[in-house]
Amino acid sequence: MKKFKSTGFAVLYLVIPILLQFIIGIELMIQIFLMQWRGKEIPDNILKQMLRDYGFNLILIAMTNLILIAGMGSWYYFIRKRRDVSAVDYRKILSLKTVACLAAMAFFAQYVCSFVMTVISIAFPHAFENYVKLMEGVDINVLPAWATLFIVAVWAPLAEEIVFRAMIFRTLRKGFAFWPAAMLSGVAFGMYHMNLVQGVYASLLGVLLAYIYEKTNSVLGVYIFHLSFNLMNYGISFIQQHAGLPEFLQGLITLVLIAAAGPGLAVCIYLFSKICWKQRIKN
Image (cartoon, rainbow, N blue to C red; front, side, top):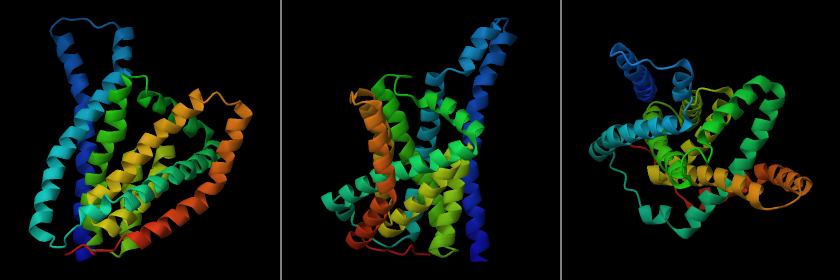
């Protein structure tokens, strides 16, 4: 009964952000329809440009995440306040040792994901081409750099961690052991991205993020990791573009880091388990 109940609520929590994305997406179409109904003709080329406007899409993403943070964040806060009695020592999570370990985990996870994407690009080249086109929409130059970084690297991780770890994983954990709950929440996280490439590596990251949440029993720990991961994605790209190193040398450095990523991540996870503590989620 516990498994059925926790799975049902987890599905509900997954449907909410997907439905919200759909509602905000069709809002644009409704606005266009109303403009045409009032007699304002919109040329096809302008209409297509509006639908492909990456800056506008980023603003829609920010709006979606704002609603998720305000709505589901409040929901989580009051549920936890009523039902969870286990205390969280935020000073330990914010200690230099813990933050450094989470940042190191995020760094090595970047290159593990690079390896996964390389495999996908070979096995599914068409899906990878679509992913590359999709990523043009979150390029640092789409909006002012500070706005893009805030929306994608700071704002989005908070919304996603509230939904997928604080709500979905936490709910699944009430009915399942850690590994089934982590894998199910990881798959849900991958599905939410709605493309093969992100779906695969986001699922793997989702399991790791569930582990961090299990250890800290708090959104703060997973948010620090997720924030670091997204910021490093832009930081590594910026360094590669402006370092001025020969292409051969950049490729060699990347290969070395990819080769070291798996062992490096494993060591960081081990160290994290040593400096952190496991607090069971109370039913």
